[in-house]
Amino acid sequence: MLGLYIHIPFCVKKCKYCDFNSYKIVEAKKERFLSDLKKEMSLYKNKDRKINSIFFGGGTPSILKNEEIKMIMEEIENNFYIDKDAEISMECNPGTLNEDKLRFMKSIGINRLSIGLQAVQEHLLNFIGRIHTYEQFEKNYIQARNVGFENINIDLMYNLPNQTLENWKETLEKVVDLNPEHISAYSLILEEGTKLYDMYMNEEFEMGDEDLDIEMYEYAINYLKSKGYNQYEISNYAKDGYECKHNILYWKCKNYIGLGPGASGYINNIRYNNERSLD
Ligand SMILES: C[S@@+](CC[C@H](N)C(=O)[O-])C[C@H]1O[C@@H](n2cnc3c(N)ncnc32)[C@H](O)[C@@H]1O
Ligand code: SF4
Image (tube, rainbow, N blue to C red; front, side, top):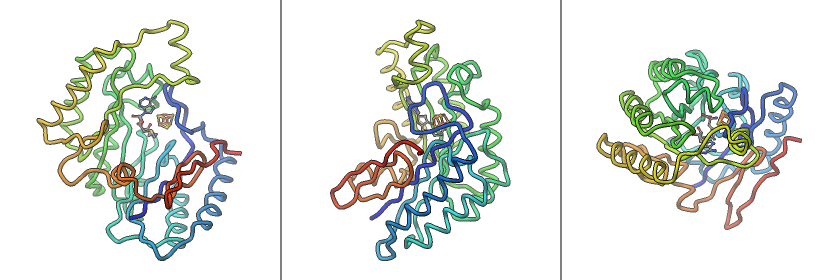
């Protein structure tokens, strides 16, 4: 079993809470990144070991143009042997998707999407600096179904500033109504160096207490279970058979190659981290 993680370090704009290695997109930097990614991939060229899982993470991989995604997929095929049943996931943001792009992604072999929603309430999405509304998300989700994606994850966050238990319940209900195969639900981590952290230090909001955090977590476990989603990891819930292959590979300490700035890999008992800086 061998996985491939490809880190796309660009976003339309930085969300206030986010500490991932991602930067507001600049065309020149993206071009340099794509050409370096090609070189980096060739260093790992190996046609003997089957790749069972490919994960495009970010950042916002769906920010790339169709021809850029195609170039990366072709490079993967040039350098590796991809199992015919490989799970090929891409993280996507509402606001960077449309039906054409989704159709194109499907046509070149991407077979699982992970779409970031976080919450359904407008005031929460605004407060944390998301670029999209709930309606935009829902439109993109329906478009993804229409073009034939049969394996979709939705990312959610809880214990957000000013988020009530009722807000969280409403988010879970609306998401379950859409019937995705997989749901990720993360408790907010207030990361030093983020805009949200500075706002907290300036006393612009109060964090929900730990009791609320636990109540939201336990509610998610029980509610999602009652709707057919099993918790198979701390923050991940899936219908039977839809556990994310890439997550499982991490949990079972299987080998994976990490490509791109800040990506981690684990090969033959050696764990490594790429340099984070784009330069
Ligand atoms: C790699 S990130 C981003 C994927 C995609 N760019 C997006 O925003 O939808 C995957 C998920 O991690 C979660 N996340 C990011 N920062 C977090 C934080 N500080 N605390 C908790 N969850 C976080 C969000 O749910 C996010 O969708
Ligand atoms: S949460 Fe996603 S879209 Fe927002 S800054 Fe982080 S990686 Fe980019």
